Amino acid sequence: MTMKAARLRELLERGRIARIMGARDGLTARLVEDAGFDGVWASSFELSATRGLPDLGLLTMSECLTAAAQIDEATSLPVLADCDTGFGGRANLVRTVQRFERAGIAGVAFEDKVFPKRNSFLEGGQDLEDAEEFAARLEAASQARVDGDFTIVARTEALIAGAGMDEALRRAHLYADAHADAILIHSKRSDAQEIEEFLRRWQRRKPVVVVPTTYPHWSLDQAATAGVSMVVHANHALRAAVTAMREVLAEIALRGGTSTVEGDIASMKELFELTGVSHWERLGG
Ligand code: SPV
Ligand code: MG
Image 1: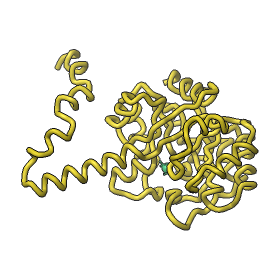
Image 2: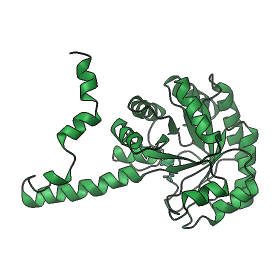
Image 3: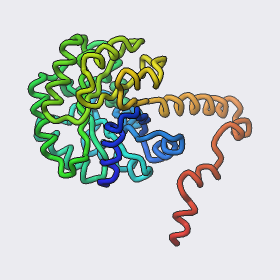
């Protein structure tokens, strides 16, 4: 488990941009690994949606931990767990760090919104937590880790909440002072303008993580040149699965059978291989 934490830290600090992909379960994590990504983002949006729930902070810490551990079990990649606002106050962030670290998760991300947070792309209702209080939570969380490589990413939602660039930078510096290992700066603009300004003014004080969901045309090279250490593609595997499932289910419903979809969907053999059947069978029944 220590190795995965060290690996995540290396991805953030190596000076070459890393790419991690959102996943909701072990199978998705395996596909993420096969596709060549550097790590897995245990996305609160995906974990919620998978349960048929919106991303409104409805999942408990234990639910998120169980899901992150299942993801972690299925991949050799490091897992960065999206822990929303940390499930409460300072003591809750401390316990979250203790439990996620013990479970072998490489790192956690906490965001500076008021509980219960709403997904960043929902209109309105993006209330920021008091910056000094959030920094105190981060400080407590950073002291709670046993392995110095276990990574705490501090996410500021200042731009999402419309609080402006100066406030985003003020918060990022406060969180760095509180020993966060990296800053996640989130934006919902359709271009990378404010992210680029943030990065210019931040001057690489600590590694920066971005989630370019709404500005997908910003290339990896542009992000690297601007000073990004890690890109999170937060939700694309789930969205791809929903589109594919809708199409196939509609076709089966229309035709009254499955013969016309067989060629378009993964075979049972592919699933047996993806889930490591020969490895498990070699172990004996
Ligand atoms: C998630 O994937 O849950 C995230 C990213 O936190 S976002 O949906 O952009 O808030
Ligand atoms: Mg989230």
